Amino acid sequence: MSRTGGRLRRWWHRQSLRTRLTVIAATAIAVSVFAAFQVASELLDWELRSTAEEQLRADSRVLAANAERAGLAQVQLPPYPGSGLLMRVVLADGSVRVPDGQPSLPPVSEGAGLVVQGVSAELMESGDSDDDGYLVYTLRVADGAVQVVRVADDSSVNRFGLGMLLIGLLCVVCGGLVGRAVARTGLAPIDRLTAAAVRVARTRDLDAGIPDEGGGEIRQLIRSINDMLAALRDSRQAQRLLAEDAAHELKTPLTSLRLNIELLIRLDRRGTLDSALPSESRSRLLNDLGGQVAELSTLVAELTDLARGDVGDENTELLDFADVVVAAATQAGSRVPDVEVALDVSSVWVSGRPAALQRAVLNLVDNAGKWSPAGQPVQVRLRAEGAAAVLEVDDAGPGIDAADVPRVFDRFYRADSARALPGSGLGLSIVQRVVDAHGGRATVGRSARGGALLRVELPAARLIAGNDTAVR
Image (cartoon, rainbow, N blue to C red; front, side, top):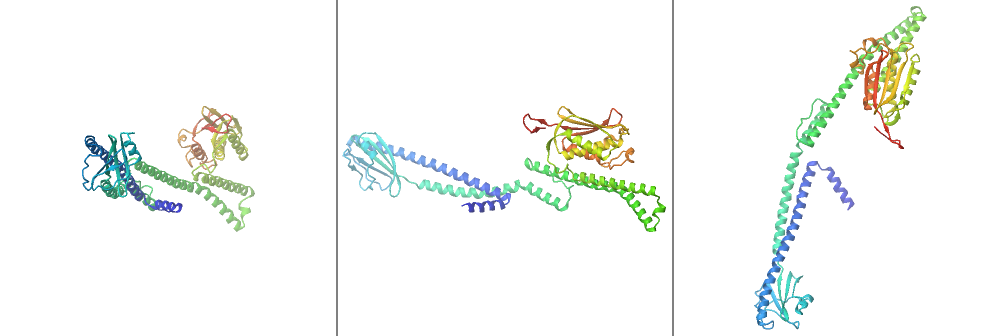
């Protein structure tokens, strides 16, 4: 049984949606017809039985009236007509009288005997003979009883059942055809949607949207797929722009690095390296090469981080943002010892990815450190404001020009005044991406010291007392 059920399930899952709808429609109609047949058969049987019982009562009253006038022992019984109604008279001593030529009837039942004895006035019984069912109505008359028997005729019920069966088969066939037609019509938008999706997959043309047709769930599905195609199109465009920008940004440091290395190789081959480049110039050139390699390494790391399109594979966890800020400030101090960082942080819990947040804070501190004059620390403040954790990083540098503010967080964007400083223009873009991924907001303004003020707002986590969980 289980094996058969498994085969049926596998067969069902292999069928198309159109075939499934057709089978479901035909099955539903078949079940409906069967239920209707059962109900109609019961109603018809009840109606026929009720009619037969009323007829038996009427016939027994006629016979009882005759028996009252002539007496049970002398009443004239009509000859048996050959079919239909059967009757008999039951006398007080238990003997019976039947019409001439009438077939034998079942023995007088115990219940009918009680009617003969006067315990009850009447009794309607049903039973089965050798060939057919029958109804027996016993009516008390004088010191005996009369009985009228009618053999049940199931021919009308059988004809009705045959008719219902034929009608049911016809309905099932018509239901299957109608279900097939409805499935074909209803799934036509799905077929066109599938064809469009196959075309997009084959041609890689994400600009070819799917026509918005149909209604309800179909239209919602088409719009969702169009939104997905638009997202893929934007992602591919962003990747193309990233590759173009990366190639442009890498071209200058790679060219400079290649020219300097070629110069060293050429002088070394000629044996004039020491004479052409004094020790001081050679040291300066090697330092430049080291700086360019470090800048390329930073640029490649930032490009790799940015090209992933997310904030890494970290799991989101509940953390104290103050710990992240302190760790980032400590890392920035170890990387650039000349930059002083002044911390003013308070504990604020957030739900986020610690490594990504630390990278964002580090980029903010590094950016401020490039502009801070000697003796002027980078001020880092963290506090809670309502339902947000607010981080502010400001410097005492020249600030950001109003024309540059809208593009501060764009990839590879560098203000004219920053062209001579080290950097790739990706640091603040990574900050923006991390903040967006955490549902926050990053803005830029002017600090009270005249420099730039970079502000980050993240949703704070509300701790539940006695529990380690948090609600954002």
